Image 1 (cartoon, rainbow, N blue to C red):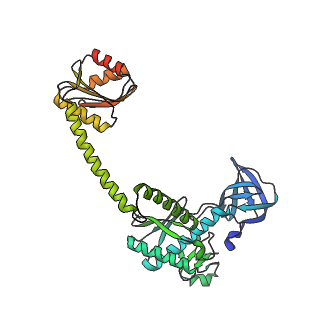
Image 2 (tube, rainbow, N blue to C red):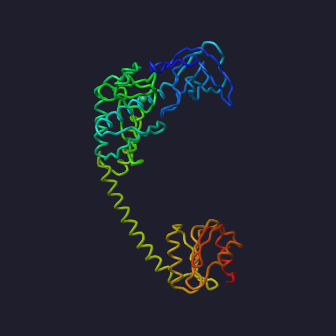
Image 3 (cartoon, rainbow, N blue to C red):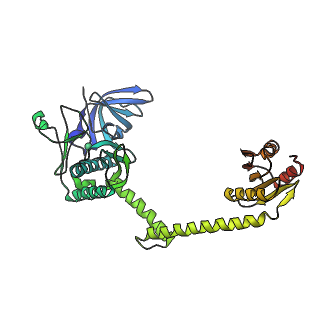
Length: 383
Ligand SMILES: [Zn+2]
């Protein structure tokens, strides 16, 4: 027997009583079948409702041949059950789903877009088969929000076959009977089985967060209603914190940030030239142990360490070696312009358990040894 779907005719039922027809263990969960339900099963890009049956959590809901299966964590007794949806989640989905209808209806009407994909998870994506420009997306977004302010009715009905045949509606389904038509007055007519809000005002807000080209069309990431409001709050709070740090006035955060980026680039360039100057001074007078040019450095910037060892190798015959950081936690770079450093690297690995490797000209990595151990090694090493 097919389950009576309460959500099809009234999407605002959050609490209801139903008869438990069966409850069977299925792996780690239980499959509960009711005579009627307001739980929307996963489908059409929308996740399943969650909630409880007689206080037992419902963690998933699926539909199979018209029978709705509620997955519960533990068994539910037969008889009359008190059922409850997680209304916060359900209402947000109704806002998002109705917002998607409105967006798709307007995109269809204005730019001939067909909705070819819809997914509602942590983010909502809507795929259109038309490559939209940013300007067109902005126009659609504005029109969607104007339609929200008009607060027009969203109605649901099951038209008779002859009415359906003459009706022009968007459809993702190839159904021929019991087609459920969701109409947003003046904006959209679409076949859909999911719960929606009853007027566009309840959507509250639709915001396009991003767009990208996708399979010859456009994928939009959107948020509606409370999800969009919370996203706005997060972004506004983040921007406020940034503005305070940048000492930027309201709405001047971006120019302040761009200025900071410019300053940062200038500082990076200055840093590079200062580092090069420092390297040219350092390589003039390295510590020499066993014919090896040695540098112990505090900086762990590997770019600096590499440049220092390579410049040293150009100036001095034999091997140059830089150890940067501190005892038991050194980074190293070893180079030579006139001999291979591979043997030296092998010995470092064998005797001091160094990690890393490289080419004949340059090796680099990490080494857990003290400065004393390193100096002893350098004094004894035969290369
Ligand atoms: Zn829908």
